[in-house]
Structure formats: structure tokens, C-alpha cells
Length: 636
Image (tube, rainbow, N blue to C red; front, side, top):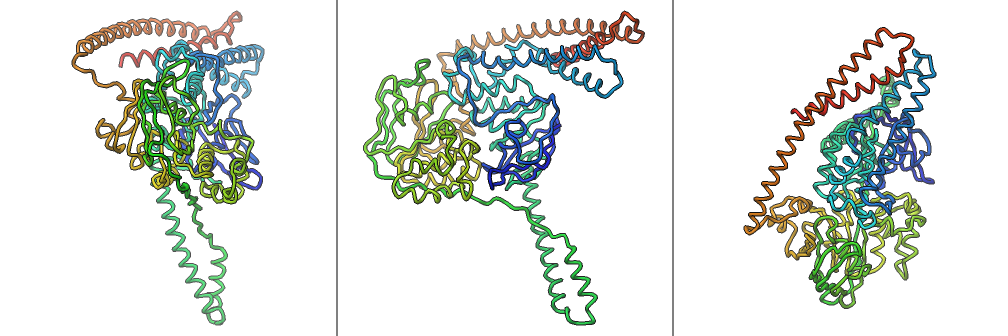
């Protein structure tokens, strides 16, 4: 379906992708893996026609539809959540126009046996299939179901998109892409802003969806669940494995081990051969054997070991100046925006040297509190203040909005560095894997992971005693996360961090503030202790176990709710039976009409419009197939 042939992408003298080749079929669900900046996002942009290769080509069918979710995107304003999602169906009108155009062309042609005519028939069939799929149920029903699956509440669908965070707007864009039902899905870190239930919904959707998928993610479980093939991008080259991520890791380790063993065996053989040649080179009685072995060495196909990228972050934060005992204090804080109060009457106190995590459901106020700490947002009521001599280093979640896309990596730091630190900029960038020509890259071409590293590098330009980090690991690979964690553990200042990553927080923080139901609750101890108390495995399960158990005094209400639930189930059973009866009648009608058309097509007269009958027959068949499939699912 899609062929990538000898594709090279270079920026100046830096070669990012070097003559890569691979093919994508309509059933492939591919995980693209590799270090940040290896070229994964670039491959997606090449397929989406958002970037052209330096050389080589990307071949795909003319009518192939592609849905691309980038890491960094523009969000639309001025519509409600539901109205914005409904824009996904604007493409339906274009499909209908194309069907009308192809139908008119078929009516004027008489080359029924030609390949061109067959191609038009196939194109028309595909268009009708796509239109039929989009008409299986009303667009608004599809949009609501998808938005609810991605975590929106029903009463949030009427709110303007600009009242939601960047992460929630990303969900709207993802919903629009899924609703368009493209032939190929290109998803770049789609789970970064999703809670556990939304991730599980997306997993089920992607597993059931019949389309090609290219997925960039650092979520191992998500890759294992969704993908059936893994393409590794490393040092400009790719290695293709026809297995999910965990099996790829095993096969890759085996392959490298076999390569090393074969290389070592060959090297021993070469050494012995060369010793024989050197020993007997000048002995006439051995001259034939010597010449034979020289020729054998010249013809030998030398084994090479695949290069591996062993570059690692070497982060070490500068010593923190001493601050007052209380670094931040929020008293009776009520915080939010004109459209919505996020949390009320919160008491937050962070002391010198503490490492604190802000945890909870997306949209409950974690980033909002970070903005209050950073002085970007004033509370609606209550008092928020930093302590004595606090010097704040703030890493915001939206690095793509903060970094100037026209700057280079080096100039981003050089523009704000002062004093002696300017002489150390190259060393600081090298710690974050920006070496050689990397420092001359424009911010606009950096991947999400590279931008995350650059944003973190900016924190090294000054000695801060309070680091406020909002989702710092969102775009980082697993090794980079671990190295950053060790650097933060060694940091002698105060840390406040927002993260959903249990492995990252465990052993790093000793205090948490949980955001839930518009309240902020303090928890002392480690992440493991908190989860054990809550009987959870991961922090994401806060999303699932959001509602506390009902107390005894609410038992009557719970009983009433259970009765109402049973009543709703009975109502659904009646609806199901009615739908089955309706489908059976419709199936019988379609089958009867198809038999009528078949009889006419078997012996057509001059008055019969064969093209119109063929078109009607195809439509009847598609409708019959859809209704039969729905009928089958209902009676299971």
C-alpha cells in the first residue's frame, strides 16, 4: 500500500535518515521505536506529505486517506467540543461529490473491458464503502461516543474548546482523526495526555479498526497491545521486526548476540589464516597454500556488527542556593478560570528540600497549581506566596509554545545566558545529547523529545532552589527518564513535579498532593505506600477509582440507582429486540431487490440502464452486508 524507497533526509551536513526502505500493508500495525531525535516523527511527516525527502520517494495510492496526529499541533477556538469534533464529517461531502463525478464518467464510457474502466469501478466501490461506513449511524452519535471514550464528560461537550487545557484539546484532535476513518493512521505519542480509561478505550479501538497504523510511543504496554510489527530507527537506518515491542526487544538482543558471536568466530579464523600466510609466505613448498588463503581472505564477506546508539544523558543540576524554610505556602486557595473553578479551599505547604508530586485526574488542577506557584495565575481567593530567597526554575508542559521556533538549539540558550555560564553552553547542551551539528538545528525541526531536553537544558543556566516540573518526561525515552530521575534525586533543592509515571516518581518523591473532586489532599510517604493504601497498581488507576465508596447513609440512594440501572437494562433489551426485528425486515427487502436486479442483468433489454442497475446492486449489497453484520452482533 505504501512504499518507502531509498529515502534520505538530511539537514545541511547532518543525515537523519540514510536510504531507508520498508513497505506498509493495509493490515500492518507498526510501532516506530528509537531514541528521541532518531527520525520517527520525520517518517510520519514524510508519509503525511508534510515533509519531502532529500532523496528517494514515498509511493502510495492516489485515493489513500491519511490521518496524522502530531506531537505538537494547533488547536481550534470558537467552537464547542462537540461542534469541533463534528467538523470531521466535512469530508463526507467531498466523498459524495467524487462519487457523482466518477458515476458521470462511467456513464459516458464504453471501454468496459479496459484496465482504466476496472480501476474506476474499484475506485467507485471504495468511495461507496467509505461513505457507507460513515453512515452506519448519525454523525453526532459517533462524535459523542468517541469523545466520551477519550475521557470527556457528557456535560463538557457543550463547553468552548478554549476553556480546556492543551492535553484535552489534543483529545479533540484525536477524536476528529478517528471519526474520519482514514485508511492509514499516523499517531505520534497519542497517550501522552490520556488517562488509563481513555488509553484502554483507544487500545480497543485501534485493535478493532481495520486500517494501517504507524504509532510512535514510549508506552511499552500500549505498543504490545496495539502493534503487530516493530520498526526500529537507529543512527539513520531501520531494522524491521514482524513482532510487537516486547518480542522485538528479545529478538534484537538475540540478533546482536549472534552477530557478535559470528564476528568473533570470523576474526579468529582471519587471525589464524593471516598467521599461516605470514609464517609460510616465503617457503616454496607452501606457496600454493599461501596464495589460496590470500585469495580466500580477499573474497571473504566480512561480518559487521550493527552500530548501536549508546549516547546517554549526563544531567547534573547546579547546587541550589539556600532558601527559607517554607518554599511555597497556599492558604485557603480557590483557583480556576472565568469559565470554571478548578479546586477550592486548598492548603498547600512545601518546605525546603522536599520533593513533592502533584497527582490526580487530568483537568483537576495540577497544572493550574503549578501556574500559581510560578506566578502565572493569581488565585480567585486565598493567599499564595513563595518563601524567602526562593529562585524558581519552571518547566512548563507546553514547551512547543515557549521555545522560539526560529532559534537554533544553541541560540535558544545563548540568548538568555549571562556571565560565565555562556562559556559552558556547549557542555550543557552535550549533557542533553546536543552535540556537533545538532546545536545548529532550528527548534522548528526538533522532535517532541528533543524540545523536552532543550527545555530542561534551560534550567541549567541558573542555580535554582525550587524546580517546578510539569510532565517533564512526556516525550522522553525510557533511558532518559531514568537518568533525569537520578539527577533529580541528587538535586539538593526543592522539587515539585507533575507526573502520571509511577516508575519515575517512586523513590523520587516523599510527599504528594492528590487532586480529586475539586479538593486537594496531602499524602505523606512514597508513591508505593500511597498506592498500597489505595490498593492500586498504577497512578493512572486514580482515573478509574475516582469515585469513593458510598457510605452507609447513602445505601438507599445506591439501591435506588441499582433499580434504575436494571430498568435501563430492560429498556435496552426491548430496544435490542425491536432493532433485530427491523433489521430482519430490511435484510429480506434487500435480498428481494437484489434478486430482481440479478434477473434483469441476466437478460437486459435496450430500455434497461445497466450502469444504474449495477450501481444500485452494489449499494444494496453493501447495505445488506452492514445490516447482516449488525444483526449477527445483536443476536450473539
